[in-house]
Image 1: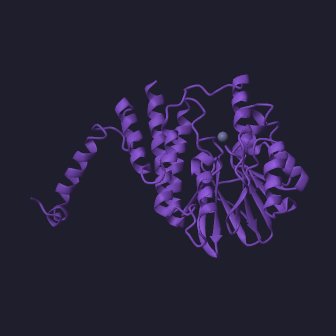
Image 2 (image 1 turned 90 degrees about the vertical axis):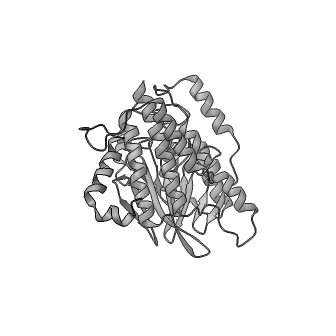
Image 3 (image 1 turned 45 degrees about the horizontal axis):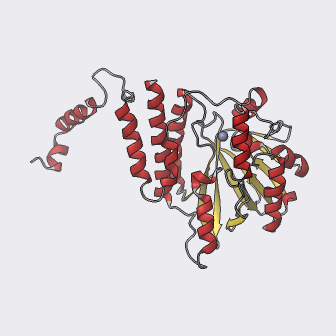
Length: 347
Ligand SMILES: [Zn+2]
């Protein structure tokens, strides 16, 4: 049997072995890095890989691997009825989850308040002004937070379940709305999902921000860095910021858009896959150990808040996942996106 030393001592042989291994993936003369052909087996392999990666504590992400329709859903009474049913579900109690981070969201869609030494950053604004009043203003009052201190409203992407309450809050508190240029433009030109339930999107004013990739918003002692993670929409923003617990610092990423509800759009799926890979390396580089979402089924935030509420003082915060687990979560989402890309490629 060849030893490792022998292999390294004979680079030509090692190269030949590597070339042979690669040939199993790409046929000779094929451009490098071309994905293997999409087949039922490749779909199953991506789903199996996602299931394996999710095995330890991330199974809540696996619905993302379910097959999605090739057509984007058009506005309809049935869609509105479904949306009303989601909105009607009772919201979890508002809650402080870190020293400087608070949940003021609904059951289905989330809103987060980041507290700084010079005011508040609201991340997402729920479905409409009624929810903004009841859950964001109402929740903040219960938590001892003053909505007049909201300086920025970050809208992670241009769908109404995230911007719906933004016009009301921005006008009332003179807060600056932050969205990516691509999603500002999308909401100004053609909404992907339009329904009277959400009302009109925010209008881009002089004080508002069209965020570029890596844009930093600093308020007092806190900086939020906004990364463009195209896929769910082409201008989805994923904010990254520090949170602390009893003074101990952690770094959080809020994944700004998750579902594949755009129909057969290969550019979006390819962008999505690239975004998960890019953020995976960023998670490693920045030791990001908390992953949040703007939907509670994507970060399991309701179960984590319930655990946090019931656990003894001093127990570890369930929102702190650890860097390898955050990376694994991104890889699960990336595998599900690859499965969906292969499904569409076969159609
Ligand atoms: Zn969306």
